[in-house]
Image (cartoon, rainbow, N blue to C red; front, side, top):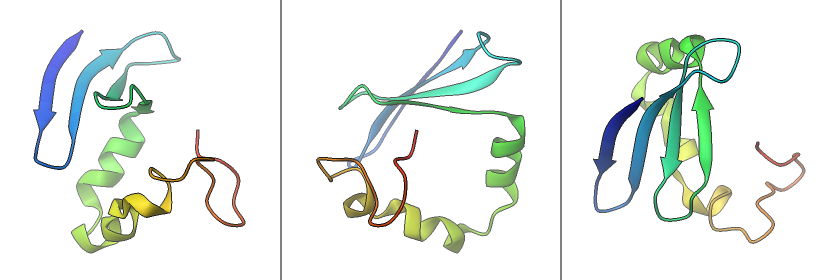
Length: 79
């Protein structure tokens, strides 16, 4: 079920509901790269309660998005 597209000068993502897993989850597709991620209800609720400042470290594209290998130093790949 397609929900829509959210865009800014920094990103463009398509949002839809995926029912292929154990339960419904939000499917987020980066329209620039085609990378897809999924968020379940618990992860979405966590985002709703998380202080905005807690997201700031994740918003640095040089940490993961712009690396050729997609791997953070000393950490396994994010899937």
